[in-house]
Amino acid sequence: MTIAELQEEIIDEFSVFGEWLDKYEYIIELGKEMPQIEESCRDDSHLIDGCQSRVWLSCDNEAGRLRFRADSDAIITKGIISLLIKVFDGQTPADILAADLGFLDTIGLKENLSPTRAGGLVAMIERIRRYAADNLV
Image 1 (cartoon, rainbow, N blue to C red):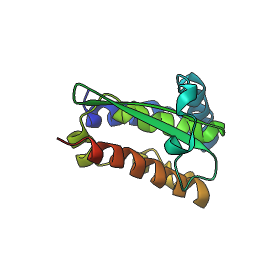
Image 2 (cartoon, one colour; image 1 turned 180 degrees about the vertical axis):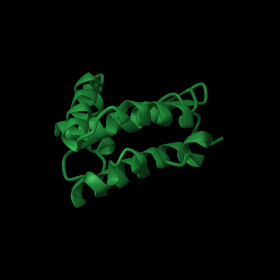
Image 3 (cartoon, one colour; image 1 turned 30 degrees about the horizontal axis):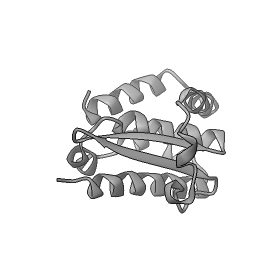
Image 4 (cartoon, rainbow, N blue to C red; image 1 turned 90 degrees about the vertical axis):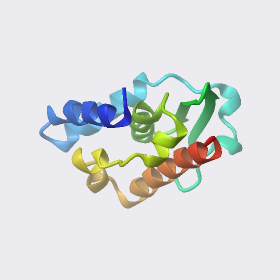
């Protein structure tokens, strides 16, 4: 699926929830379902600066497509990074760099995060884009 298709899928998933509490619970569930990152990636080189909680992100280039794995010590943050991974995992670096992330506004995520979590979201996106830029051919 393309990044745009994946974003539309997430928008559809979130549209069934009327209250933000329900959306938070869904985000928490997404985090719980995310596969564990390898223990070897739970180090400072994979730690994302700018997040209030600790978030680790690894990236591998498999035949020109980036594969992401992540973990966090905070369950909401883990759910947020799982949303980003759902959109970007398996995509090409060029597609990641060109992606418009309007779905975050559409589902209301940005406006319903605390300032520190919103800053962490930006830091996560920047790290993903840095991995994409580093792998651009």
